[in-house]
Image (cartoon, rainbow, N blue to C red; front, side, top):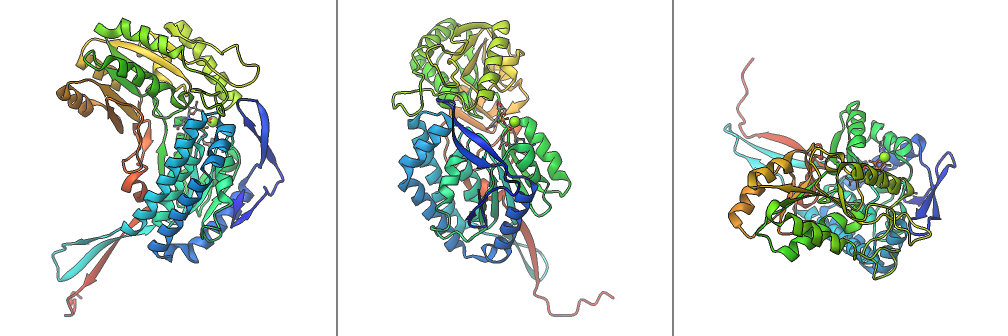
Length: 479
Ligand code: NAI
Ligand code: MG
């Protein structure tokens, strides 16, 4: 772990194993933190906040963020390889993630000096303004699908705001952020400003959520744990932001560019093995192109090259863990009873090791089926037919989630009408998944609340202080 500027073990001496999902071999052993370790990390973060970071010039905080970005770029190859070995994802995708993580630190390095207050036109002989201040110590809990990138999304805006951080990576994938932590002091981060604590949810995560000196919890993960976090945060009335995944609709009208649409459906669902919170796993296809679309998508899905992520021609790696593979395989069984299979549907036979799942397409799926309502978090697409625009919108919104959605059409009027009708925090037109640090990220409904990225991301770590300055020197004279 990385606590108060130093490598640290768990007070209990406990550890857990970290795996390579393509070989199923243990590649590292990490400390299993408990409440005592969280206590130590919070103490360090609190001291670092009050003894310096809170008042460190924004320009200086920005420069440190730029240097973190430089370190990621300088170590891109090494970090990407480690990310692939630990998460299973194709190396080409891991390289994109490293670039995006660096860009995220650069964006917030720039934003650190642009956090402004406002002057307010109050009527009395006075001036009033609203100023922004860092919340204090932030606890951050992240998942395993984009390990270093999710760490960047959390750490960069918090530091730009002037908060100090305790970040708990997912127990499956702690390695890249621990590797980057080796450079924290070299880039000028004072000890205790960013602490990385490893461990599982109930042992380490829950202790972070319960700690009285943590002012804010930022979480990305399952809706189930999101609910636990909200309850846990209630005791000390902590600020909370939650990004909880979804069951996002990807809507294809018959006037869309057909070839591109089929590619977009596959890309939207299968990128990163389908382990994507915004995966377009509900594919809604208009009836007049439905049959042709199912056939074309299935034919293409069968050509996706599975293999170890380190092979450069791999398009889909293994799932992150045995637990996740078994979970997804369970949904393949459920799906076989609820709908028809157009491609995949099982665990591939050609590998002697590795937690692989075939890219799978179910069709004739009813939107009320479990495979249309529950987040699977694997390479599983459910294709649902629709008749017209109103039908598409009705089906698209018939879900508890509301993270993302996409619509494909050449008709600009239809595209914008559908955009307006979708209950989702992110909507793409004629693409699905492009994500930019400048634009807000987060969900409606059970996909959570709060927004990451852009200026919205930094606001999640800021309090607003109202200041009133009396300019009238005559006595108040009331009593
Ligand atoms: P999870 O939600 O249990 O884990 C995410 C993070 O929360 C990890 O760091 C974990 O250690 C932590 N955590 C777990 N229990 C906690 C608790 N009681 N208190 C505090 N922190 C806790 O996700 P899991 O079990 O890895 O995956 C299960 C399903 O969750 C997936 O199949 C997928 O549907 C969904 N998921 C969604 C993600 C998203 O990006 N929206 C990411 C990961 C999983
Ligand atoms: Mg869990």
